Length: 137
Ligand code: DQA
Image (cartoon, rainbow, N blue to C red; front, top):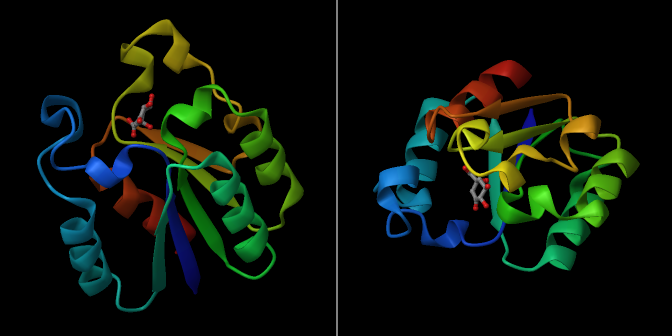
């Protein structure tokens, strides 16, 4: 099974960025542990701060991969283009957020991705990525 994790803007700063919300672990460290935990899955990871690059990646893998875990970060709440890309591909997408977006500012309650997602996981910290992989398995 092939699963791609896509992280959007500012998530390259995990570990340094607002650790009280997002924790103090870097995504690279976490991803190394994930790969050891799920040796039965071909796990890949892509991060970009650029909306169009996230859309290009969804198009690239969205007809061949078995699952995509998408944390589009701030673009979740603004991007019709990413929402449309998720609707346009065949691979099921799980929308993921590290924090509980519904316990935060109102603008984070809106998602352009959720209507097209297989499911949404939020509020469980980095553990959410594990839950998403388990749901694909
Ligand atoms: C986030 C939540 C978003 O509202 C925010 O813009 C992010 C990260 C999360 O993982 O909790 O950058 O997607």
